Length: 225
Image 1 (cartoon, rainbow, N blue to C red):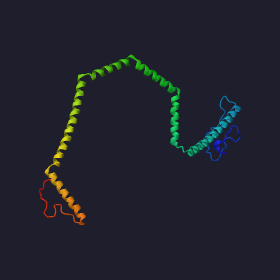
Image 2: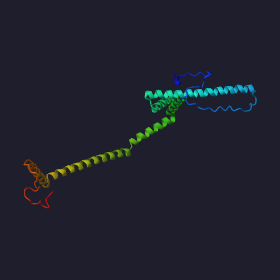
Image 3: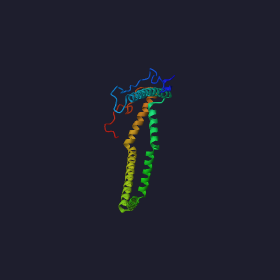
Image 4: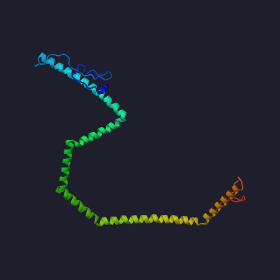
């Protein structure tokens, strides 16, 4: 039989004797023989000591049973694939639920609700809210507020216009550059080199033609670009 499933009879003569695999938890009995306390007879002392010994044995037995139950619980969790983190989450969730349903939490929530209602219905709160609304209305209709809005709007429009002008200027400059004689001359040179390279490959020649054409005449040092 699994030690974790054994029923312990505290009145059994074999109580406290479980499997050898269980860990015995020592208990400080504190039953050293001393003088008889004042007000007790020797018989009463013997009876109390006997009862104390019995209770201490029961404590040892219960601790052994608890240790066996904990081991059995750990084995079941391992077989179910439950990790210590899952157990921690369950414990936290249960603890929070217990807090929410506790009388202290319920009373505190009710008290906070009452305080909130009293505050929001108080003359001071209503007066402060009304004053803030008046200030907000006066601010939005003030000349300074309107001028600030107009200034910000104009600044935004000017910024957009400046960015648009910059973009137009860049586009115009690129167009002028593309239509310039220097750029067209460069395009012509590139086209000539490309046609010669393609033609040389089609004719099976591995020698690339000179960028200046068939002649060995070097490029001008001050060619426009």
